Amino acid sequence: MFCLYRCFGVLLFLCPYLFAWQPAHPDLAPALTNLENRHAAAKFRHNRQFLILGLGDSLTHGTMDGTNNNINSQNAYLQLVADAIGQVEPVLFQQPFFDTEQKRIDPWRIPTNLAVDGATVFTIDGLAYAKAPDSPKKSNKLMCNQWFPAFLNDKYDKVLFPINWQTNSTVSTVDAAAWWLAEPEVGTNALPGLVFLWAGNNDSSKAALGSAGADGGLAFPLPYDLVRQELNWTLRLTLDVGLGLNLVNFSPYTAAAINTGLTEIDDFAAQYHQVVNRLAQAAGDDDVTFFLMTLPYYGSVGYLFDSEDLEFYLGQVDQDYRVPPSFARVAPRGEDISDFTKGDRVSIFTFGFMYLLLESGYSIEDVNRALEIDGTQRDGLVLSEQEQAAIRERINHFNAVIDAEAGMRGDRFVRVDIGGFLNRALTGDEVIYAGDQRLTRKWTRGAGFSLDGVHPGYTGQALVANYVLDQVDNARNLATARYDLAHILNRDPYYDRDGDGWASGPNYDPVGLTQLLFLFLDPDDQNPQTRLQLPDDVWQRVSNVILGEVTGIPGLKQAVEKEKARRQAAATQPQPTSR
Image (tube, rainbow, N blue to C red; front, side, top):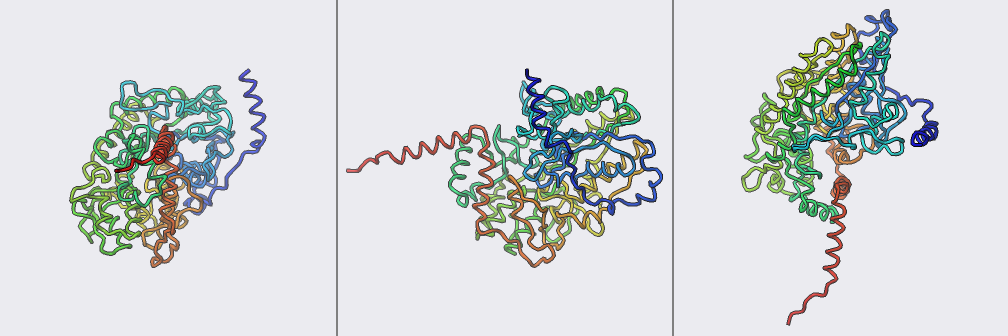
């Protein structure tokens, strides 16, 4: 009976999708160099296809600005890799594109990019990980378990659907990849496979980004005591209740919170080995090459602002702004930065609220209370130089696991040291240019990141794609072209063209916390004299965005309603009279 219902559901929902939706890709021909001369005669010479599978997290999903949509995914590294290979060999590569409201487009199109924003080495296997005796354990929330497009609510459903129809069971990312690899055609000369596994970034990212340390709730690097009176009444009540119940945490850079956000090394090693084993077993002896990609330093991304960043931006509001003495500098004031690993950091969100406070008329002393109070550094809001070093060390251990896994499995398993490559650029050990622009860890000024300061922008994605294509060419004896980074930079909406520190950003409406980032778009990226313009109702907008994020925390909405009722009851009680 269940199968009958499902068949009826297919007929009902399939009609709008009989003709597969094909997005218009950006014009990549000018960015691909030396293509015609090298491959005109060789194109499609073997009459075969390359199945391209992607597994991992937001970097492979194609996230930018903390947002998933087809605009971002079409400019992300795996799409660029597939397009470049597709110029010399036929490829089978299908994206689970989202629209700008982050709803799945063409849900009946079977995806080969299986990466899910926010995934860890555990969640791609359908496992929830915590530092507890019963961890990890299976979780339906980490599987594709919805059977109709109308019910694709979480990202695992939206990305992996309809592979669960193909297998007649709920599927994890690894299950979906195993299904593709077990298909008979993959092992033939007609369909060799390329599998890209870039997993493990989020096994350290929460510690570096300040999103760890709230058990089941929301961790967010917000100087709440400083901005509370600027927020609307509903949000203040909600956050006060959430703090009382430990459902929100605004001090995520304590040692305890950072430790919570770091996967244990032995746990990572065991799970990574299990994932690679499953993929290898599914492929069997077929013509499949696995690319195991190493991890970059999350503590060195543009999301984290150092002393030079803070003084550059806040100095635009008040030229006398300086970080307090307790905040370790990345370099002496006015001197070039020789080591990008030096100095303390705060998150882009803490910086943003400091900027709003200064713009709202608060004094430098008041604003710097986000960094120190009475001469003592605010540990919960400041990620110290030492804490960054500890996170890097954990990532080094993770990369050692990936190295060992690739080394023990033979030629079909290729170690792609994209992490090491990006780390050398992020820490300043290697100088990389796109045309005349040096790419650095600096937010929009470094031309490498999207607005969230975490995910690469168009130029950074092309840089990653070029490095990956080097590995593909070596492993599969291809000769793909490379992307011209200067050409990509010219159309990159995240590149600060006028040098004032702000970028114009992409042309779509933001959702969620991304709305806060879009408050800081450059109104005129051709004129450095045009100042950033914040809306008159900026604090109301900020309140609405944060309220939208916290109301989904389980149990918080009910607790707030209960507190409202208690206050209303107390207000109606007769007051005792004094004699």
